[in-house]
Length: 447
Image 1 (cartoon, rainbow, N blue to C red):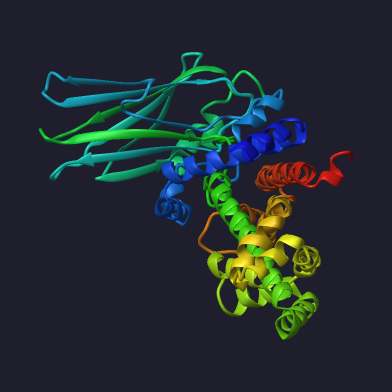
Image 2 (image 1 turned 135 degrees about the vertical axis):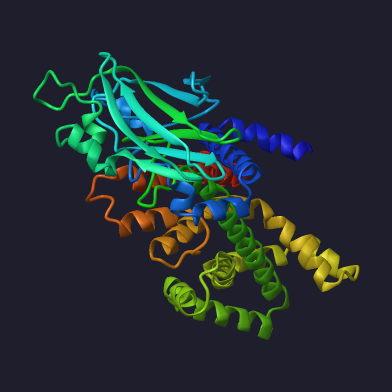
């Protein structure tokens, strides 16, 4: 405990260590929260759900914070249903005994552009006679625009943009523009202010019911935007955190610990054991590391666990073996090691209780500093199409953005958001690792 307190005091002395610690802590907390809030199976089902899950989202739109940097505000997406704020429901019966249900969607339109689309979703219950709905839009200047009238089934989707009759009534202007346009100007300028979308539903059976949902596909959506399949990019950005940390930490820990143990064994036993370890290391150093991983992902499996296992296996016998061996050669000649031999300590006891503990302080900084390399490796493999096809990760997000020409179409957010997270993760671990290296290596404290 005393050593931990001393280390903590040293960490506080370095601003870079404080910054790195805060970043790493935030990432760990975010990873735990994401796993708890959106379990693995749910995340996979949502990510692979396609239009069935994400159909009510706009396609390829930036996040809402785009409006913070624009004078002309883009339309924010809207999803309203019964029970939400701004939705009123009135039940009444005509003199002839016909029940009428009036659903009013009140929303403010304070934007300088027009929405992508307007969609109404209906669900109803009936035995023989279908309910009938009549829809109108009341603009801020008190104009009433008839939208449509039709009978609906048990489920009915009404995309206004595809209604040719409505387009004719709007003088050939597409509905997503014609319903909001200011008729007093020749230019297409929207009328800003409070709108009301009124639905009058008539049912012809006593137990018949009807519910409605209004969705306005805007030009911005959520805090991360959407992709070409209407998927909310918040999911891969958030779930990419635990995947990146798990891959980076497991690979860094497995590689560092196994490299240190193998180097200690080879140094202690020497002879043929050390010779075999050194020859394997030299052979592995000339092997094309990335090419082998690509071959494994192409011809065997792209599972993240298979790639992780191959990464650890190929990263054990590297230059770290020789670095640790040089240190262990000095420790091996220490007097306390000779004393341990004299009282009959076994080889494994000397390796694990006398040799290895001496260089653990040197292991920790290197372990922390190597995490970003493995995080970038996983993202690079996914970018090359070798990533896990199931998991929503940062690299997979960049790969799909590249495949859909995001940069050429102006969808910069699609690539920049995962890239920023990758850079912040790498910067946090790197700064913490450099500070720990100064703390545990006295020769660097004055640098």
